[in-house]
Image (cartoon, rainbow, N blue to C red):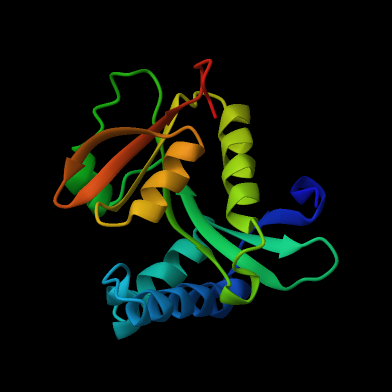
Length: 180
């Protein structure tokens, strides 16, 4: 299967908010049922308003299958740090010359689990960041106990920078020969 021809990515809009929340919460529930505490905070609903605000601000993207409007994955990509980024990475001081991009809440619908949607999404995001002016790197974090996620990010060219508060901090550099 040629995954580059199977999916398309668009910026999520306010009307997509419930679908974004549904995918995130379903994934959080699945993680909990499989023994992970990752994203358990999403199940309380306390983050709903913040997620909807970020969708409305244009920070969330949706992945659709080529032949339907079904949202099959979501992710947040931003050049602005949020509180969590500052807590983990420290505050960007702007001296690098370009702001890093931060990737959060990448989730694939459980109905499409195992279809390599995540591989497509990671390659799309990297190509997108490469195309942006002033983009130097992309950062993300994941729980340090998730060997599967750690392997996934390394497989896609992300390099572990450090571990902070039981979270692995990964970075992918736009202008390196090993972009993965």
